[in-house]
Image (cartoon, rainbow, N blue to C red; front, top):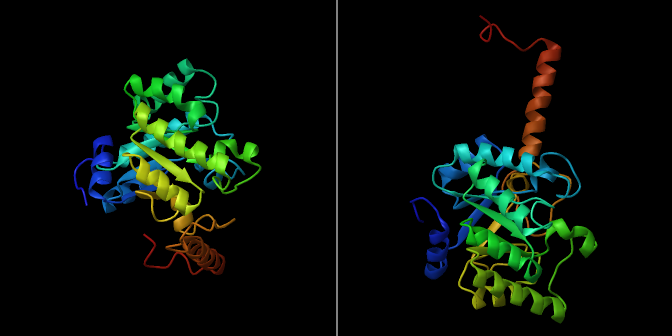
Length: 267
């Protein structure tokens, strides 16, 4: 495992060596500090915060100021991992000038070292301009949650030949314009394998099988903190939601019964 500071150069070196890239989301100082200390390669300040933290049904309504606020908290905790921030809906789709300015805010105000932008061929000109001013970009194709209404729900992408070709060409174009990696979300594993083998930048899978160069998951999902639903591609490593419920229930009972605080817990 690389022990030095993770940068876009590290991502490319890991691809060459066949070393898997491990990414998790974080939205606060405490979680980011833990992830950085255990050696996570990259922390994504995902717009998924809108669902798991703010309780929204989609990622669409979160604003750029909220995202920068969370990014700043994460960046303060991190020493080694690369911090990448999601650019929220309508922060980059309107025009190139807005996209560059808003992407720059994540680095200047939020302390991020790169941004993630959803979209394939239709977004490459905007992404190219952002990269040209010195802002690293992680691409994101397949199921792009900000386009959820266009897809008609959280559905697997790339099953039809036309969509498959679009995703392959998008990945190649994102590499060509300078993206340092690309997220492949919710697509058949064979398609993800083909894309991963056709480009020199790392592919980061989420619901895209084991042939990607790395993986990303939402930290709340793997910890069992977000219990509303569990996607097929999520592996639960803990059930902290149940543990928190048990602990708080016990506290409630102890307060009501007078068992807390005890003599030892009093001055």
